[in-house]
Image (cartoon, rainbow, N blue to C red):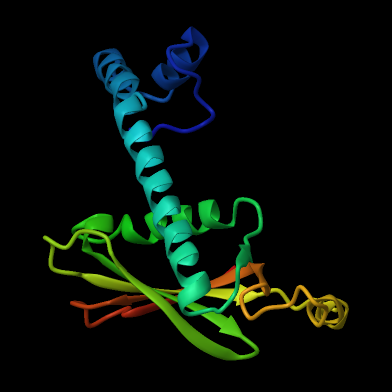
Amino acid sequence: MVATGSLSSKNPASISELLDRGYHPESLLNDFDYWDYVVPEPNLNEVIFEETTCQNLVKMLENCLSKSKQTKLGCSKVLVPEKLTQRIAQDVLRLSSTEPCGLRGCVMHVNLEIENVCKKLDRIVCDASVVPTFELTLVFKQENCSWTSFRDFFSRGRFSSGLRRTLILSSGFRLVKKKLYSLIGTTVIEEC
């Protein structure tokens, strides 16, 4: 028997409709009892674990940007759009959900695209005890502002310094997944 949206649970009218079609009463009750238990209850432990994992991934990304701002980017501030790292973390979790080791098998290369040039920021290994099964390449994008000349006007003043520059990230990013141990479907590219 196939459950469809036209039958409503154990509604007597629905059951009598099936009896009219020639189904046996014993099999109907067994089938309905079976469908009562098929839909699993949401596991709150999994939901909490996923939220915790997502928040840890957000912190890793923010730490990466924080470490890179003075060492690799030469700026004092990096402005990140609200919820950008949260969206990226959710996409990373979604892309890792189909992998044999999940997020633990991920190595993430974090880059920043500035004027069509990619600059390497960091390499994040999610679990060093697990052999990587896939790589993700995350590319943050710099915001293309029309007010850069206005900003440069203020940066030429007496307060200017090499580390006073502020980098503004765009809300867009690119995430490229490369499976390391698969012959089919090795690369997935997502533009957001």
